[in-house]
Image (tube, rainbow, N blue to C red; front, top):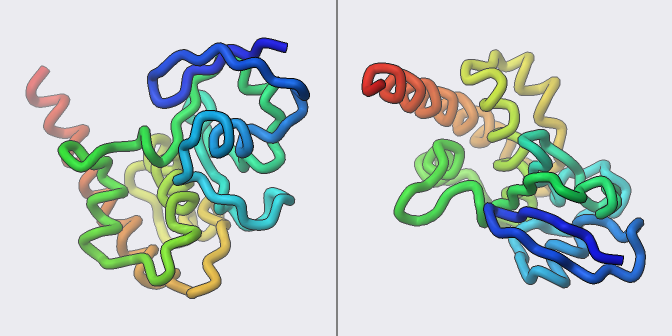
Length: 163
């Protein structure tokens, strides 16, 4: 079966034997984008979080057939070294990662939250960012999420004033 996907702005027509294959394996094993991680395989930990049409999705339990003709963004497509996303900037500023394995999922979940609410409260962060970090860098992440919100709001203000 041919599956049409747009991943990080690039169109792909992929021959997939099983349309129920998790999107995670398509991204990692077929497209070779290794930033999205396998954690639990049950959509519980969030290491595999990416965006499908702007929504945070746990890709380990999201069948590729549901991603057909949708825009998928992985951590590789969030920003780049020359133009990092506000979440990536904040993560670096606050030296968030310890082992770093879960961090792409946290950054993708945070970017999805900030796209809807660029000024989340601690309670809103707790309600929306439910990924798991075995190194317990939650305190640094919370600070980075607030900083990413500031950077997002600054970007929104700059876009409004330059229009």
